[in-house]
Image 1 (cartoon, rainbow, N blue to C red):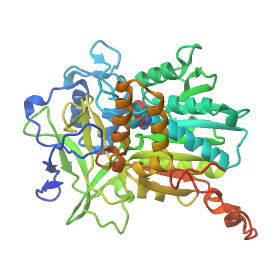
Image 2 (cartoon, protein in one colour; image 1 turned 90 degrees about the horizontal axis):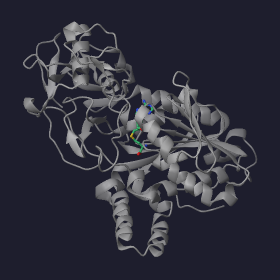
Image 3 (cartoon, protein in one colour; image 1 turned 90 degrees about the vertical axis):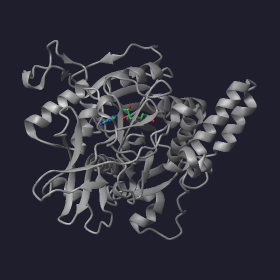
Length: 464
Ligand code: SAH
C-alpha cells in the first residue's frame, strides 16, 4: 500500500493500487482509481457517510461488517435529517450485501467450486464418510456448514450420503446451517427440502428455521455457530472465512498504524483510506516478530476457530476449511467483486462482495494445540488425493451428451488448473489430537497400538 504521509497526529491517506480482472474471487484488488462518476450514492454509502460524520472514521473490519452483513434497513434520506427510526418510508432495505441477494453463479458477482462442478461436493462427502469411518463410525453425527451459499455443497454431500446409504445405515444424521443471509437461507431451504415438507420459522429464535431434507434428514438454521448444539459434528466452511471482517495495519516509522475509512475531504460522497494517528486496540492481534510491512488480522476468524477446536477436542469430529489464502506471508489482499469483475472496495458499498485472503497460520495458532491441524494444501492436491480423476472418468463414461461432457471437463479444469482454482484455493483441517497421533500419544499407552490411518485428501484416499 502506498501511503501519503502527513504530519504526525493527523489521519493520513493510503491509496492507489492496480486492478487485475478475473472471474472468481482469487486475485487482489484495492481501492483507489475509480472515477467519481462511477461512484453512485448507494443507501449503504449514505448510511456510512452518516455514521462517519457522526462518530469519525471506521476500521476496515467495521466497514466490512456493515457492508456485508448489516441486517438493518438503512436510511436513504439526507444524513442530517435522519430520525433513526428504521421503519419509515425512507428507511429501505439497503442493508448488507449478503442479506438480501443471491450473488452466486453466472448471473451474480462470483462463482464458487460447488457451483462449478458436482464433483467438488461429492468428494467432500466422501471425505466426511472416510473420517467418520476412521474415527470409529459413531452412531450419530451432525453436519454443520458455515456460510452455505445456495446449499449446493451440502446438497451434493447429502447425495453421496444417500448413495452410500449401506455404509451409513443406522447412523442418525442432522444438518445445521450457520447463515446470516435471509435471502440465501430461503434458497438453501429450497435446494435441500424441495418443499417436500413445510418449514418451521421462528425469526426471533437462535434456530430461526427448521425443516426436513428431501432425503428425510432434519435441517436447522442459525445465525451463530455458538447456537449449534454441541455434539459429535463434522464442520465445513467453504469460502466462508474470507468474508469475515479484517483489520488492516501498515508499518510506519512510529510503529503499526491501523487503516481506517474516512470521507474524502475533496469529494463529499466519496470514501478514502486513512491511517490512524496512534495505536489502536486491534494491534494486539499482530505477532511480535512480524516481518511484513502490511498485515490483515481477522479476530472473528480466531473466535470461530477457537470454538471449533474446543468442540472437536471435547466431542470429536472434524472441521474442513477450504478457501483462498496464505500461510502468514501475504500483505494487502482486501478486494471487491461485482459482476465477475474486480471492484473498487470503497465504491458503491453494498453492491459488491468484499473479501480478504485467509491467513491459515493465524487459524492454526488460534486452534491453540487443542486439536491437530492439517494443511493448508492446494485444492489441486486435495482433490487429486480424493480421486477426482476416477470420479470424472465415471461421469464421462456415463454421459453421452456432448454438452454435458464438455461441462464436466470445463468444471474439472476450473477446479484443478493451477492457474485457475487449483493452486489458489487451499484445504485445511482440524482433527482430534488422537486421530493423528493415536491414543498412545495422549495416554502414554503401549508402543504396539496400531497407528491411526492417514487422513484422506491430505494423503491418498484409502478405504479401511
Ligand atoms: N459456501 C458457499 C457460499 C460462499 S459465500 C459456496 O462456496 O458456494 C459466503 C457465505 O457466507 C454466504 O452464504 C453468506 O451469506 C455467508 N456469510 C457471510 N458472513 C457470514 C457470517 N458472519 N455468519 C454466517 N454466514 C455468513
